[in-house]
Length: 181
Ligand SMILES: CC(C)(COP(=O)(O)OP(=O)(O)OC[C@H]1O[C@@H](n2cnc3c(N)ncnc32)[C@H](O)[C@@H]1OP(=O)(O)O)[C@@H](O)C(=O)NCCC(=O)NCCS
Image 1 (cartoon, rainbow, N blue to C red):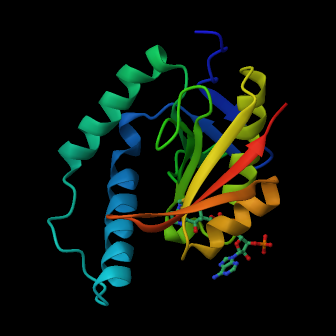
Image 2 (tube, helix red, strand yellow):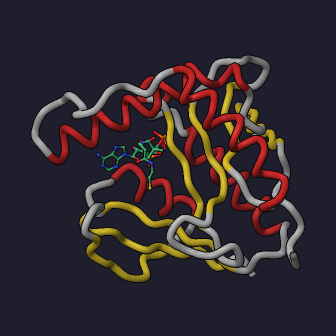
């Protein structure tokens, strides 16, 4: 691979970003259930998700899978914690997503209790710098057109809107891009 691997740990002024650990499973499960509740309230007008909540075992399986596959791929999501604590806040990192390994997507998602404190911007700024250091020249982020907070995070990082597409599942999705070179 022509790129250096994304580090497995990053530090910011207030946050530690590090490879997922099994102790993140409960927080991760809560994050998924909040996401599904948000999705249900946007799409069906009700606050409750349709399916069963994620089990702790399923959360642990996802985390073990992420730990196994991360070293081979060179990009990954990192779990986010306030520095010096084990409190799970969410994650931030790089994924292939709708894009490519050469020009991956920036991704982030935080528990509701952690919103509004600048954490996503602080974590994502560190990931952008780490992505630049891997030798990549461009990053993307794809965002639902309804997601004003995420657009604001991307604005603060310098991403610009490139195009809008309509997908069957996700609806209107805006592709935003950041040139790193
Ligand atoms: C998007 C998300 C990660 C933002 O996390 P965060 O830590 O609250 O973000 P920050 O505090 O760094 O920045 C949020 C910015 O959006 C602004 N904002 C929040 N709600 C807003 C709204 N409804 N309209 C416009 N701006 C809004 C905030 O004021 C802040 O901007 P400011 O610093 O200029 O005041 C968080 O809302 C989240 O996890 N959402 C669910 C998952 C998700 O949507 N992930 C992104 C998928 S592309």
